[in-house]
Length: 405
Length: 127
Image (cartoon, rainbow over all chains, first blue to last red; front, side, top):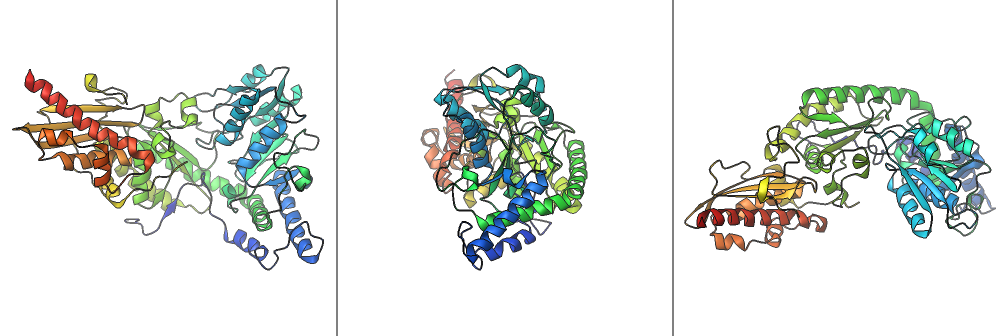
């Protein structure tokens, strides 16, 4: 259903970005026509190998890295797992200290928690109310036995860009491997790994208009890391498994397009986003922007609306044909709202009222305009249903009849 | 993450919730939930001869919380207090053609709120 508009609008690029036609085209020969195993020496294998090599080169070019430093994985989650576990466990160690942040993706936080269970110690650096990490806090957390620092480049929820350049310098000065989860940042901000003091960097293809099921980990030459998948020794022994040739071909094409269009697309997204933020905050009372006002990903707008809950917003917008997401508990399948919003110091009831809008290259002014036209109605309808308002502030427990469940 | 898929009935009650509002001279009020959990329901009833003659709600919560609130007002209206007390979370979920398992806690809210409102009425009535 998309009343009054006639087409669906996709504002959830932080979740996944639609594959571009050129990407689909680049992949298609490798499903059947050229379906060889890239490890085979015959012509079928060689044409598959060529696609893998080209994909690797394209991705390396986007990041200004050496192709030999690109390890293909099944996606961002595997890249993060490989970076965290592979580095921590290098040298058959089962103890040591890891520094990460409170706002990392679960693909970093969960491996850290797992390692904690094995005997590692983990420091989770807190963030400011804008989700920013203070590099000095990272420096202060370093111990003699610190084996890894893992801090994301851009937050997946509120889009805040972390000072990875400074953190990288601090890590380098201390001789500690530095991993950054750049899943949300790659293709949106220029990354020059020749200049940046990063040893490991996670990338996901489908967040940059490539196919799902393929990702990569940049591993700087000389970084001590063990594989987490053992087998036939693919990817320089770091990631055994027959290469996902169509995935790599598509990923490579997506990287090529990102390199070509990044500047223009980012500028346009920033303009669209800034306007959208301004309009929403102007139009809707008791609305706020979560995250940093300027140090944020170009397409990311993350709002908070008092007195209402985010899932209702997402459903209400979906009924009007607009796809968004929320960090509220009800949408995550747990009873806890987003750990990122809580780490930023938002109260539970505030975090429940969040709405994430992540724009992408195919979005335009008409779509943003339609969103701005319909959002106030969706918000006010939910506010009419809500017991809370300016007169009955959110967080008031409703008096003695209240039952804590 | 689990993305709940709601029934048409849930979406209907979410989109067009029945009996939203407050009753200024309510005979009983039930306030349940906790904003921290993301679900709060305030339920107002009018009672005449042990029958619920009017019922309204205000809810802060997810789609299921709003739909279950709306549904319980339909289920409870016209029922005697004894009948209404027997309404369970299962009855509400069934009337909505089911709820995703992760959302079953939301429908607790509606049945709880009704029971709270009836207790509130009975406490005042005895006094």
